[in-house]
Length: 232
Image (cartoon, rainbow, N blue to C red; front, side, top):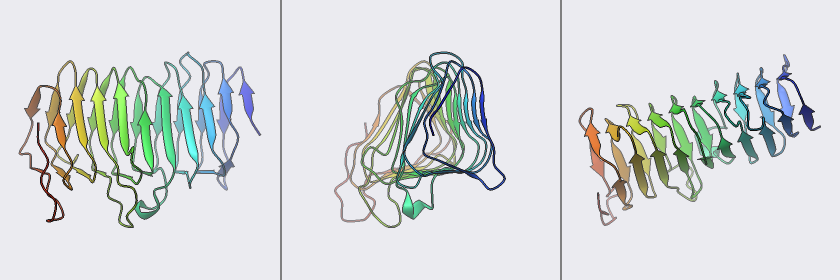
């Protein structure tokens, strides 16, 4: 059921979309206009041009992998992504995009390899695999809600890496709770933060000039029995 199109791809179903097929366009938009369930791993590639990829409703990953290549287009997750936080098992990889905007996410891994615009997380996120949340972009990153890499049912706890070449902003609701290392980097305007960080004995690195936009608490001893790691 793969789709290769030289025009826009619009998918809609009153009963929801179930898909295991890849989609390829030549710089044209791909819209999932209804609640979407992945029945297999899929790749959506709009080429090097300005082809946006939009998930207008919810997206259930199950244990599958979603790979998105939007070129100079943007990626939007308007609805909740993934299953319940205790069943965060799917993987999301964004190879390229201009802007990336997401509501809540529950997954094993969210990885953005490249970006040029603004990457914005507006909803709470939970990750269950070692790679956790890993975003690298030459643009900006805004974390407006919480990130947790310690899911309620346990698992291979993950790291948090946020690297915004043009700046990193963490809002007052953008608290990070991680069982792995936290690495924060902001070029351009540097790091602006009002979010707390808690780890279970894992390092927290502020790798760029940092400005506090509010009171911030950093605790690397969560769990009581860990030896606190360094805060740089």
